[in-house]
Image (cartoon, rainbow, N blue to C red):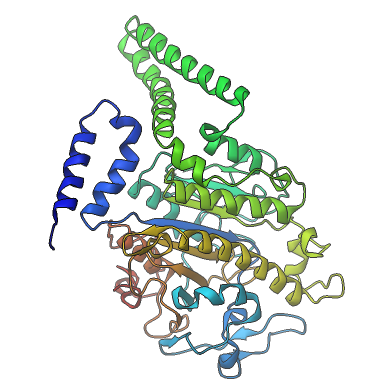
Length: 476
């Protein structure tokens, strides 16, 4: 690799910056420039998790339907993907995407439709809870149980640190609950054992929490100054008080001190990113305070895109809906749970309604991808170094069996095969060469520069060696 005088000067400038007083304020920006100078670019993930299953047959390109699809078991139920005893790997370039995926046509060369992975180490039913992103059995129909390990979004948040390690956005709480208006714990993401991750259900509050530093009103500036002063005084008072305590109490107080110091440090870092945040935050509109579910979800996708672009996080997750959500903005007057039980609505079959919902999700993903594509990065764009992952916490159907767990992957992370215009279907459950969602999550950890041999627990009915390591088909 050749270095010219300009790149040398840039390195020298970054070196000086790292030693100056203002470095804490500019560290995230400086680190990104330093990495780019070394040819290393950020890696980012956006997980979009829906409820009520993701039907494999509805993801098959139109020209492949006669060969790969069979009718559902009962009248009114979705068609099914035919079992395969071999790996299917086909280019998408000359194929017609199914109607619900058409909003992604522009990004077809960076899209992978991934079929055939299993997740039988998880529970089935209405939700696999933490298992969907964590690869283990937990909970029951009403409660998520305990987080036994980090889920993949939590593990990536640990591997790709940022001011906000993980940004979670949702419409509702647990899978059977409806729309919420507060911070909730939906039971699908965890930073580690017994460390569930929170999601913000209120778009306006999420905006304030993440981008409050970019607020422009005088009241907002006054509130920020007051919060900073209070934090400084709190940390100072706690430290003084700490010296007067015995060792056991000092240890307890350390936890409180760590929390306050973390808030203090986060505010300093955010101030250093203020200009960049201002340039990327979405405009506040009525949709941020709307009671219509589609409006709120659009706002959440805008917030997720802004959080990734501004650099305040490298891992975001959008919980797209719950079983009690009703997509009134799409002309659907029945909640997702009813649609999952093949109930018709407003002149539509349940399949037509579910396809309309999926298309809406794809429209939001396409909007995020377009925003990422508009930002140059390295020799390409931010989308080249970001992976958008779409899945359901209930595997392949409303009452998931977990024998088949479809995914959509969009973007790249600089990996030629991460999202590369492919229809990829692995051998069906019980067939030779069958792979699991654990292999996929090992692949994501490989993308993040933290390779590991096993993610979560193994399916004891499948050869352990087949479940170890990443998927070679998705590694450059």
